[in-house]
Image 1 (cartoon, rainbow, N blue to C red):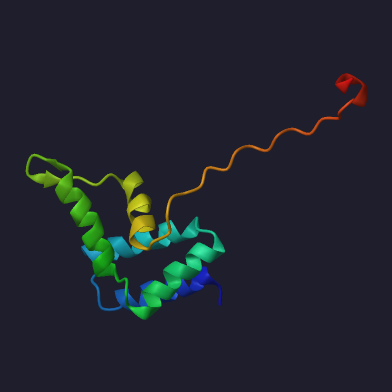
Image 2: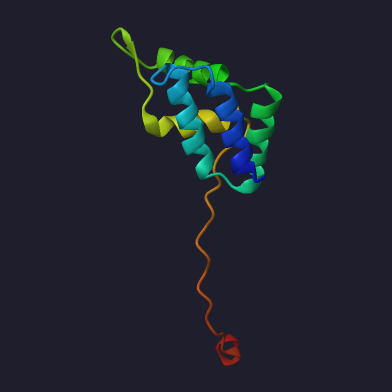
Length: 115
């Protein structure tokens, strides 16, 4: 079973008793979308946390609610969808996404140019 499948199974186990359309149901969908783009090692961390019960749909919902509470617009808490993956990375302890520099184009070196 791959780490992605482990995440899907852990999320499915937590959503069995939820009504479709509940907040936690949408959090489950967010976790599955988040997990799609993870490298295998990071997906393994998420899968381990979900299976162990240290991170649940409720704890993930709480991190989004905390962010929304800090970013209020009037009486409404706001959490844009593009922020959710960043919140999940922090929540699961995955750290920042590393920006890898573009590889340098290879070119031939003429030894006479060095003289």
